[in-house]
Length: 401
Image (cartoon, rainbow, N blue to C red; front, side, top):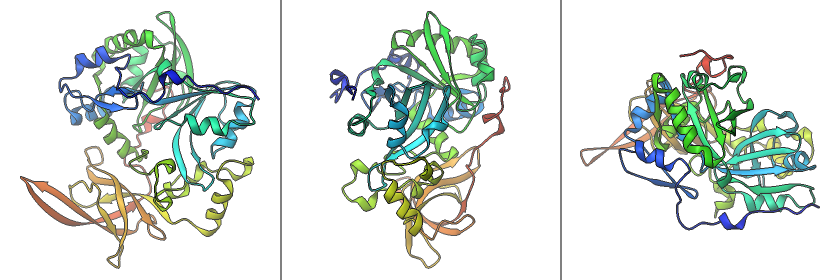
């Protein structure tokens, strides 16, 4: 077995550190407010979360991805190791492609979700919301594989929105127009290697750019130079959250509780209960949680994650969901008023057999106006499709908006 290693010097930091893009973020940060994401300072909103949201939908927004937890997996057993770790068949993620997946504990409860980048044979990167190194190292026993965290070795930017391709084209990345959704390629950039993936967390046309931290400021400067006539704007985490809700994307710690954080196992969720059954492949052989998920598949799940189109214009944040008999059947996990869908929308976890497409439910909404709380019972309809899914997201080559 090859030694599995991890750089402990950067693990479990107590302070929040500036991103490699911090000097440029500070120039754009009119609000002068900072939050913490993992080991780094992050920006909730640079000047106005709503306007940054509109930049992401009508032009392009730039979001700092550096704090995202990144693990490198390499070696002769990288593929069998990953197939043992996650629920999907990683063999179907070919070199130069990115795949979304989840991984579970032995009870079939989701620990986290994330993207798997396949660079070359036996060379992968896993990006996730939560730090997973302990679980990944434990799972590597018996495999000839190297596993290490590289969060601090890679700087990342998300460039999201309809003009994102035009910006990369103006940046001079020849051939980026051939990149299909979930595609991955590398460019020479200012004497460094720039990795570009056609991925994102907004449900729109967009890319993620990965570079050595020493070239982070150069990348930021060149992007904003290239995007000057294409409406490029810095975008904070509040705007990104609005964009991902419209796309129907879930977020760890918000739409589900990672199993390792749960005190009560009943508060966790399986892939089936998160609408991710399509990521569970029972035909590929053994993987962690397979037996429990097989049993659940046969007997049925306890919960169902649904998308709700809610009457009125009040966001249903943290609202209870009621069935036809007036009993509480679930809770809203994410909610917003969607400017693009022109509707109050939400993601909610409801008890089965509730949550079938087209079902009418009731949502209890509390909202405050001028220090006075109001209560509204609003009708909600379960819908299948994402609230935002434009054709440009898949168009190849993309249009130069």
